[in-house]
Image (cartoon, rainbow, N blue to C red; front, side, top):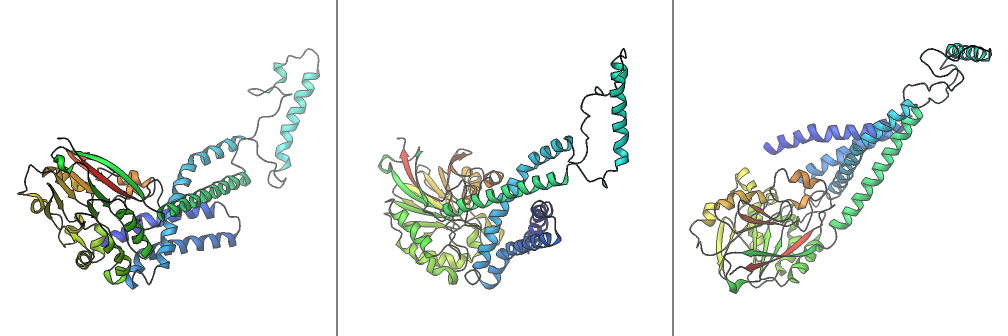
Length: 437
């Protein structure tokens, strides 16, 4: 019920007004014929319907059976987003250009639009002034109209509304520029999202880490988002990248899938090949709870990754813990329990916590966690979404700190929604723990 209400709110508050604005700027302001306006209106309406269908149809008939609908809808979402951004940025130049041209001379118009009788008195006045100046001895001031320029000078330009042809030129120029920019950025983002993940390497010091574990390597991956738009090659590419890191431990911190086990078992199968000295571990993300968390926890275990559901274990002198995602609690399927995962541990050992969302670090800090490894944010996925994500999450990408607990956030290896990444390429991070002893 809550999801339905939120979805309806998104439709009413976001989708409708945005499409109306795009229709006004791209169709109404740029067309001069009824046919052109009807075609443009039909295109905007069809794209809006495709966007809504991308969220609804896969839940009704399944992700695989409807993959073309999400592809069209999500691609339009990306183009729409950058169209909106560019057009909003162009609003100020558009206003300035219209005002400047409104002050300039009007283009000559037909006599039936401006009567010749209105122009005649102006010419008579000018002719009288010229004649007066020709008379000897007459002061120049007497021959000049009051509060005006010299009678023999140019007449002041007429102020008025912007010439319709100029207004149309501005509107069409802005629409063309916004369209080309949005399509170009989206094309770049598709290439980035579907390419190999960037392999990052970061060293993180832990005060309690024994010297014997100095240089301990954890391969961190999140937000793989196996789904109808990824395919099995997506997971194979990720497995190759992780295994090439020669990590001591692999951490998969949620949002592995966007669909049921029945739909995506084949896409997930290559994960069985993940290899490290101390094994692979998994915690749930919010999308697991949208895709059947219980079934996926069984499947993940079958693939050789150990789920950590509010629990911990000791590995070579450090404590590795994992907590469920916040969405589990919201949906009544078991949320994070930091007390169960962390109370009673050996305080002399450093704690590395796997938690999908960076915001969970506020609670982790209360339990003395040394390092939290997270994903969820996608690094913003499409700039400037990173600014919006920053309103909710304390760390968006890379290493940060929350109340004394270090937090490292990966951009994730996949994508959600549009297969587009701009300013936040997919990544997998090799974390080297360093001892300060």
